[in-house]
Amino acid sequence: NLGLIPCVLIDSTALRSSLYDSQAKWGKSTRYGWYKGYKVHVCSTPEGVVLSYAFTTANVHDSQSIYKIAGTCDIFPVNPINSRNGEQIKSSHRRVLSHFVTTTFGKQLLKERGKIEQQFSNLKDKGLEQPRWYGKNRYLLHIQLVFLIHNIAYLF
View 1 (cartoon, rainbow, N blue to C red):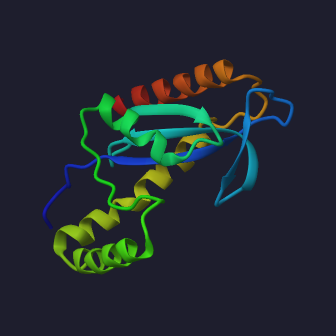
View 2: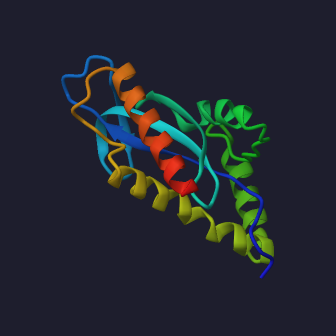
């Protein structure tokens, strides 16, 4: 056991909104399929502290927000796959990745992947997703309060 890995977790989650919300946009989620709403892109520690976030409409791709989030935390993100890369680059990446996950560090790093999904589930249980809010600014204020309460609760 090498202890905790000094890393942060960055991911996004879908926040459904009312169909009558004029500022919400349509997006596609693996969980919900097509939905109207927003996304929150979160950078957090594996322990659950939210370090930074970006709030966007649902039609914004995750790759457009990662540098904004990472920049606020002085993190240098490394993302070897771009959606515009060809199949040859993707297949070479898969070969390198398959060797990386067999190392001790790679195994520990992959164990951290599920923690951000657990954090999203915990935050949604605390009321992160509120489809009754109309308007981007109201929804943004709501998620800011949820993150603030979540981080304060972590301290105690």
